[in-house]
View 1: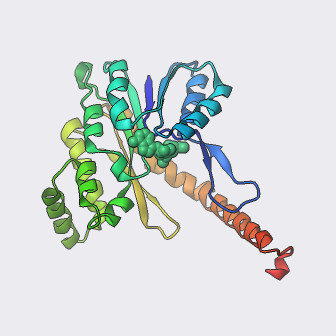
View 2: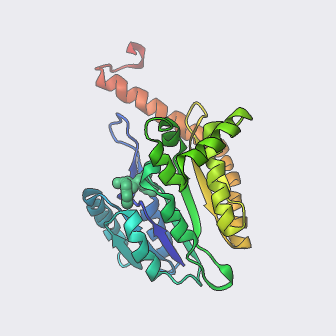
Length: 263
Ligand SMILES: C[S@@+](CC[C@H](N)C(=O)[O-])C[C@H]1O[C@@H](n2cnc3c(N)ncnc32)[C@H](O)[C@@H]1O
């Protein structure tokens, strides 16, 4: 299988808090390479990161896993995509993880290229896309052209849809999600699966949208919601409250307090 991470970052995630020992965990790129090794290098991992300093850290972080099967790229995802697609045989399974920081980093054009990398029996790549709806909502009036680019539609066209949907009770982020899913449906002929990723106040920050052209692929991707719900119920709430306690303690220490009673 070919695995592509177009916005790979440095392979490590760090909680941006005032902790003495910040919480760190493996990011998507490292997880993919690790997993590929668990499957005896049966995946070829193509990992790309634009920023050169972040890219250098990614290369360093991956040294522990050498040798691994794949390639690193230090380019704009929307440019390197042609090079990567030329290396991928569309007759075999491929999975693209597309996790930009903001909606404007991911023009629809790139998604369209991936979706139309068609192989035998209409096989198309599988994708998991992070659709940053918060940024889209914030830029409705400030930078509507960035939304047109992300959706591959004229401003008139998307505005008409979201205003109609809004009047019938949908939120703007739901309307953007549905436009995106409808565009993927037009190509794949299958409805994508989506998952809302929320902040602590339970409002949607972004959507994870997943699509496959294969029944088995869709079955697996459909279990995404169940998986995340289960994780939320079993571990997430506890982990979150542990983190909150650690942050509070870190803040107290920074403020010179030594005992809970002083807080
Ligand atoms: C949200 S982070 C990815 C996090 C990663 N998936 C993880 O689990 O650790 C997005 C990354 O994309 C990079 N980036 C931004 N614009 C880019 C572009 N046009 N092409 C490639 N990478 C880009 C950023 O520098 C950042 O490291």
